[in-house]
Length: 182
Image (spheres, rainbow, N blue to C red):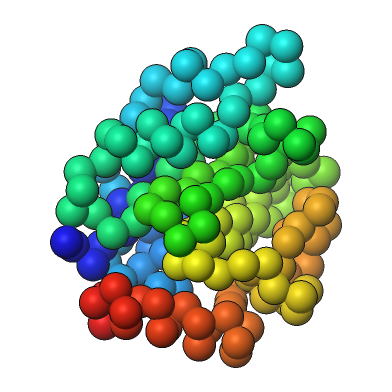
């Protein structure tokens, strides 16, 4: 198994944040990360009644479509995602599993044009790192500055740092070592 993370996009053309996310993932997790197309058609997950895409269905399809040698898969989508118990989600991951995904659909909300690019990119990276953290068994952290803190709103995303707190970093490093990544 590659001690690598595949960063992919469910959009055509690929999402513009793919390369910045790949770099952030590689730096934060200390693992090699690559980009490649994997699953461009996600219409199977569309729910007409909600006008949204069911993220859990997409996660399953990503897991089935990805070659087994990839340690983790992170997908970026530009559509509105949901799980049945919430009105929307910024992302979802399989806790301790292989796949995670984020939606950029709501991450540009409330941004004035002058700040849109920089803040938007920070939000995308934070959500990507957060969801990928779940695949390494990290749960939501009570520290509001930790990247693993649960975000109820876009303001919560802006408030937290792009880093793991000391406690989450220890757990993450132990899991990566256990998986043979370092």
